[in-house]
Length: 527
View: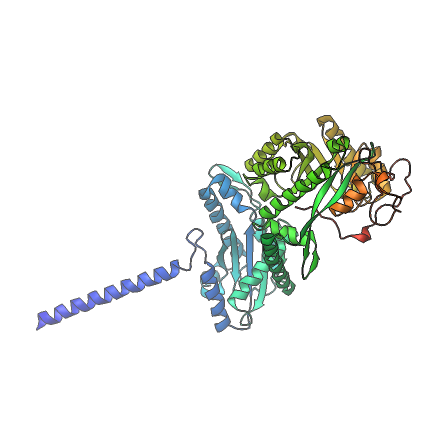
């Protein structure tokens, strides 16, 4: 009998140990399912459960969620490898933990802080692949949320020493504050994302608070993206308009820039400023860019078939390229194929890349060099407003510089703008580069640019962007083709000889009324 009791106790103890082991395993699996293994921060699932628990247990308290988006973090992964990227993300998480502690309720009392557990303590959260957040389940009274956002951005100022490298990372912070019990966990994340997107629109290194209007903007953005997707698939709604580029010295037409327009069947004309950034933020920019290239080259072929040889040799059509296209290995072969298909020489095509893009990565440089070897002319658009400098002209295979409107506006009365433009013109002349001034709106601006040595201009003072048939009628037809010259209106300059394209606006007849801005929506680059 005692032996039986002893054996029963043994099996009972073994069963209890097994049960405890199962409980520990389940608890470990539960924690692992709610923790990011890289940063040891809570993951999205853990955050949702924390918000739901707060809504249930402590309704009425004020809470806050801050999200730090690491700008172009993918570039570090691509250039240095994912191991280096992981180390940067891990270090950023440790820095944010210190920030969370510094802004906690009892940061000045370590004894009290050691007892802060559960839903009262601020928590580090891995919100996305390149997003880290801080969840404040109990917002400190008197604390400014903008101070927390600024401190989160400050942790990025110190470089990350990883694998012998000194890496600098920038970011944006979006934050949202709500009263517990009023907003679901999913809405918390949606609102934080809306605030982060708003901060990114303001520029790198900025922060933004959530506003209800941001949700409307996201809904509108999604609607535009869906409509854009449908139109790209069937090719409907898109057209190209052409804005002339003229020589003030020769008083001739030198080329034109192809500008993309989109007319939605329900919304009407959609501003390029609305849909181009959305296309650039998705894969839609590549098929859209291919459509623009094909249509512009096709139109150039149609014009060349009706023009004298002298005008054909001079006329160029400019097409803007996006960063995604520069990373596309099929871009150069596509352009070569289109030029051969429509029998247009490569010298008649000018490809513009905006200076607001970083162009020093190997993929972009390789693509630009291949395009130069094809014989196309490469232009640096929006010069002076982005990543490049005068020294960058030495490293990029460009043959033309387009000075941004920001330096042109008011140049007739501003000596600083005159000095900047004069410097660009002199450097370009030494390097053998063409210079085009964009956004000319006033005759005084055109006169001053001519005095500074800038030979080519583009803008509303010359003409608005025109449909291809109107452009051909007003800029490519000979005067003899018309029985009577068209009176000057608020649309565009009068017609001119295709071999001379004399512009009455400059030189002999400066009193002709410039084109008015009221006849057309604001022009914007196609990309």
